[in-house]
Length: 226
Image (cartoon, rainbow, N blue to C red; front, top):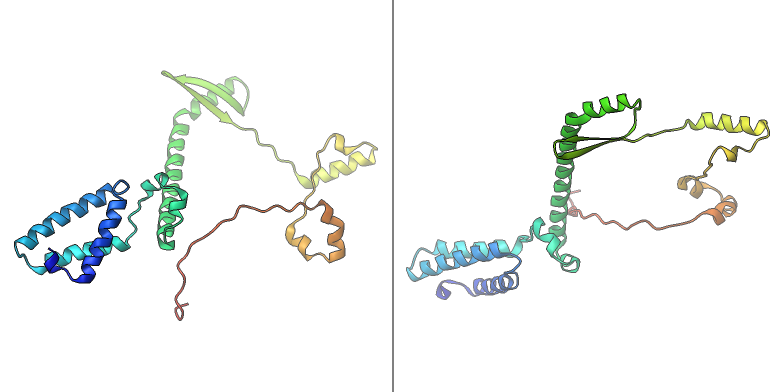
């Protein structure tokens, strides 16, 4: 087969053989495809088959030298340091695949939980009715399985009305802190808009913390195509 390949094709073949050798444990499917095509192409060369069969082999090599051969299923088995050496387009492709899988998994989870709710919600509602309660946890069995239903109690307070209550308590001479837990907050955009002498008053109470750094990969727009 060597007589039918140009020098650049031989170099490409050598590089690809090296890559396949290094990745043979990580990418056995690609390795088997390479071996199959290699055997067929070698046989074609021996029989002096048309040149397009040789070119087909070279095209295959060039395609898989440039394509991302790492699948999403392989990612958990690859160290983060190794993944960090991938090109931006490879990382972006894997990230987009992971996002799609996450959305699909969430949709399936919601779908299944809705079916479970439909199956058991009437039973749970009847048990709560017998117990004269609307929230809380109830247990019952379905065959050999124990089913647990939980309806959390969620209470919200009207902030404006609470202010009136606190004012009324103070007017009567009582301490509202015995009844109401008070918290204070300042919006950051308001703080940054204040004059410096006002900031200095509040600065001792301001605790600055860094959030987790995040990165987003996107293809750059070519000049003249914005």
